[in-house]
Amino acid sequence: MKKTTIIAIIFCAVLGIANAQKSPMAADTVAYGYLRISKSPTDYIYEKYFPDRYRLRLVLNASFMIPTRWVSNQFLFPMADNQNRVSRSFTFSLDNSWRLVKCYGLGFRLGFGSSWYSVDRNLVPVESLVPMDLSELATVKSNLKVTKFDLELLQRFFLGSAGSNWWYLDTGIFGEWNTGSRYKFVGRYGDERFKYKERRYWRNDMNHLDYGVRLRVGITRFAAIYGQYRISNILKKDKFANDLPKWEVGIQIF
Picture (tube, rainbow, N blue to C red):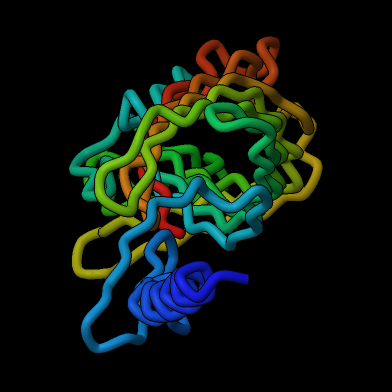
């Protein structure tokens, strides 16, 4: 072998070792979410990754209903000064999602929680109010609480990224199993405070199952906003003229 050939081979080997030492990929790296940062004091890498192919998270869902009060059209006693005018809902759920391709995935959510519906009427039975003068009974609080399990099947479209956060759009259908309810009334009668509470499971005037559609937009890795419409009724039509509010708008916190 010629001397020049040996020198060239040695030079290439030395150059390769030097480049390997300088390459940031040769240094130990640590992953932080969608970032990977080199431990080397002089070399830093920024690499953008797709979201995990499978993710399981505990989610808090908080929303309010539209309209914010339920007009029951039942019973005879109108409200005097209701201080609990906003209907709202709080649930906890397990969020499962699978990214099938770069921009599309599937998932489901399983949750449990309660909804508080502000009522525009006094639903206390007449016999509980005797012998009060109803004109002097002022309403402080009147709400109907519904406890439920929630199951949602969804498809997810990944819209893009902002920094290390991915924007996504969820469209899904959901079903709810209503396991019970509680009506609570608090009023003032002169200088006294009047309270009434009625808790029922498997109410005869309530449907045990309902369903609807849901739309969700993920805005950060830790939060999303959503809206939903319940297609079916919770209250039976032959018992109540108006159903509980069907629209909800809220936020999810992961």
